[in-house]
Length: 294
Image (cartoon, rainbow, N blue to C red; front, side, top):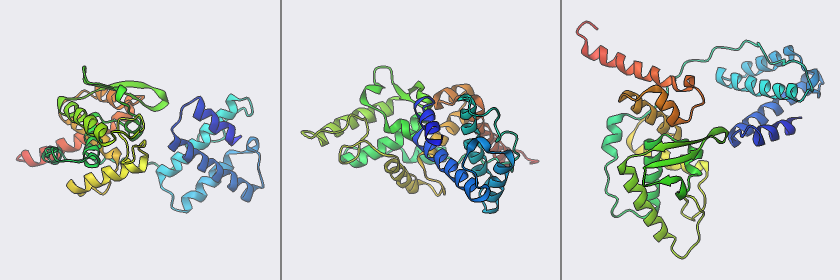
């Protein structure tokens, strides 16, 4: 059943590889718990109390509220699949209370820091350093996901209209505009890249490794982590920080929330609204510094 479900969300729902791995791990963990504690190997016999017991056991192991919510979501999605297939009639994972998740504001880089560190001499840069700069600048300028950046091809970049086509979650296509600075940087990068690999074949992606291969998630993570580490003391230094930075700076400079939603490729506005909390926090800081009676 689990394998059928994973094939379904991979082929039909187009879930990401990361989500597939997480859901598989959760379902296998629950399956093992059923066998060890209820001598049960049949998902059609699962009762709500069994799921409550599993989640309570995980909570006793200090799993965070966000992890518990994710695991419940994994089960609920799986049981909805079984209902869809006509195997069961109701979802035993529904209406199970869980600890409330803390509202966590997204981490992002300071706008002034970004402006000060985006000016650099590229005239003497070799391919690896130039590529790393393009990774960093593209993530900041476009707010795209790491997976979207990895899969970017030359043909996805329209230099005439300054637009990048990306394929986001659920195979949804969107266009992201970019400025002249990034256009010049990308144009120079293509020249440097093609010269670096002259006479040697390389994968047909816009950004490639030193060996000319398609980038992989940890490769991008390491590059961005190093770049952020040079300019910031943030604890988190992942590629997703650049996405948060893009959205926060756009909002702080007057961009409409619905426009940011489209640029980020969010399915609904609720996912984008987290950035309004960041904006309110900034306004509170400004108020505290500027108002004489604050």
